[in-house]
Image (tube, rainbow, N blue to C red):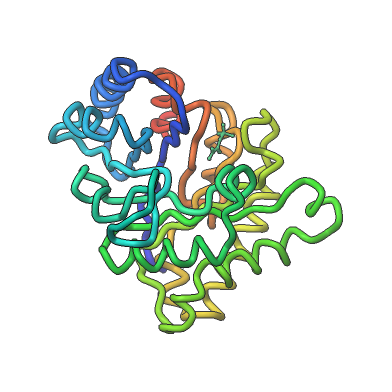
Length: 256
Ligand code: PEP
């Protein structure tokens, strides 16, 4: 079976001033010294990318944006293209986060266009899916997640190929920023379902390589239990990624 390097990703959302962002990176850099076999990623707001890139310097911290537009350039006021993100030093981009889907009416078709553009450019997409509480209570969690996967990756399905570097994130909407985490068993059940979907839609080798992160109120006290599950390959962390001491405890979960 393929070895999947765990990833701990911090989604800063619309938080932190430039100076705070810089200080947070310095503290993370310090705290990950000597750490191996884990990838660390941060996704600051667009306006901080340059500052954060400089603060990262040569450290092993990947830089992601929280969103992008699918066109390369043009009259799209307020939007930022994938190429611009690459020029700003991003290697990854978060796409289809539930806050984009719910607050900004982003559909899976739009996410698919973004995934297509990002992959064309060689930007690694972190594609988010997840059901609402109402959908879970109605027994629709798997159906909703499958529909989001199919539509958000329609281009990969058409090509019959999913780049193995692609990262997926299962983020149940009811667990984001609510302090309510999915139990490790609940999360694993959906992660397993996603991996089986990749297996049946693409192939076993791809399914074994793709990393699936869990997101939703991840904290130092629940990360180890989540990471003990075979199909959970890391975490997408919101609130708890904004304080270095908390984020570092999550990153260093293997030390207990
Ligand atoms: C997120 O925004 O992706 C997230 C999981 O947020 P939080 O960790 O705050 O629930």
